[in-house]
Amino acid sequence: MSTDDPQDLKEARALWLQDRCDEALAKFEAVLEKHPDHPLALIDAARAFGARYQIAKAEALVDRYLEVTGRGARELAMAGQTYRMIHRGRKALECFRQSAALAPADPAAGLELAMLLDRAGEVAEADTVLAELIARHPSFTEGRFFQAHVAIRRGDSGRAVPVLEELASKVRHHPYLRTRACYALAEASDRSGDPAEAVRQAMRAKAFGESDADTLRRIAALIRKQGDQLARAFTPARLAEWQKEKHPPVTLLTGSPRSGTTLLEKVLDAHPGLRSSDEHDLFARFIAPPVLQPPGKAGTGDAGSRLAATDSRRAERMRAEYFGGMEELLGEPLAGRMMLDKNPSLTELIPAWLRMAPHSQILVMLRDPRDVVLSCFLNYFPLNAFSVSFLTIEQTARRYVREMESWLRLRDKLPPAQWREVRYEDCVEDLRTTAGDTLRWMGLEWSDEVTGYRETLARRLTQSPTYADVQQPVHRRAIGKWRRYETLLAPVQPLLAPLVRRFGYVD
Image (cartoon, rainbow, N blue to C red):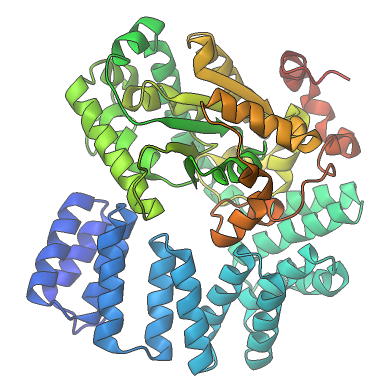
């Protein structure tokens, strides 16, 4: 932001920062009418419209920015960053590549290029970009961290561990960077077969989050309260009434984080009769909240009562916003194809989801509860009201139990044909059969393109944190990993035992 920016542009930004999205978008529209070629107005408006899933408009604004400013290295990097923010990863990657070809990338642009290459599965090129970047900027700590992170995945922990240990140990480094370094060290230790050290490093990482934990736990408690209200309000009779309304075909793929949802989504996404999206915030941030709580009063009122009072006109507006936003996200019309929405954080919002799309098929991924809890505990998640539960092994287990017990109670209220559970272990053992059975349940015939899902994956950047795992051939290494961590899991085994039995994972 420049002090020379128009006052109305500053006002639009302020409205956006206050989360007054509709007012901010209207203000940005007015700014662009007065200043149609103002570079920062074009960029700021693009980011705002893109965040609100008006992506075609946002994309046109970035295109216009490049026309106005020219395609210099700096301008291409700015455009690349914005394309990435508005869910146009491939255009972002191309901009950063063109920028780097014109002039050596600055640290921020070089890191973004490397991260996009890594997400696209072009790991060797990402490593080359990082090496050149760090040679020019040897004190660029974020670049050094990501280079070490990539090295671990390429099997070169010997090169990575000293760098990560230095980043984790020095107080002068930002706590975020130290946290990430510790989690990367935990990953390296796990890969080398040292579970005790992996746990030590994970615990070391979690200590950095404790200063923010109390506030986030209070927010999490409000979310849990809302989930309980939704569960009480949802009844088979209400669902039957809602199902008098029509909507396009859609399947919600959910479950606990680290249960294998990304693998199944990417496999199914290769089917020509289906399009999928992974882990966006359209429903949870923009569609559900206005229905579940009074405007501007998060965490107040009874979400269940508000859900029950949502009439058919409001539900139709929800559907229009959702399906319109998804087509914007995908960059093409659904044209009768099945929409598969993969979002493992929506389990407790399923009642609200079914008010929007009452004919939805609900696909829930299962995995051995002990492996899920271990994976959630050992791996990095951005700290928020959801992941704050992963700061201790007991809280991690309790979060998992609550989520899956919530699903089981809801499952009993749904028509049997409307839901299906798929086991991660079945995907690993026989991916073709598991995918075929799931597609038939969704009403789709088999396509041989499904078995070539990794070719489809190469054309689309994965947003999930587990993008690197799904790029690899399917393997058994993660099945039964919990056995190497029995000391860590011992205190929570009694908590998990009922679900272990319920889901059929008894030894």
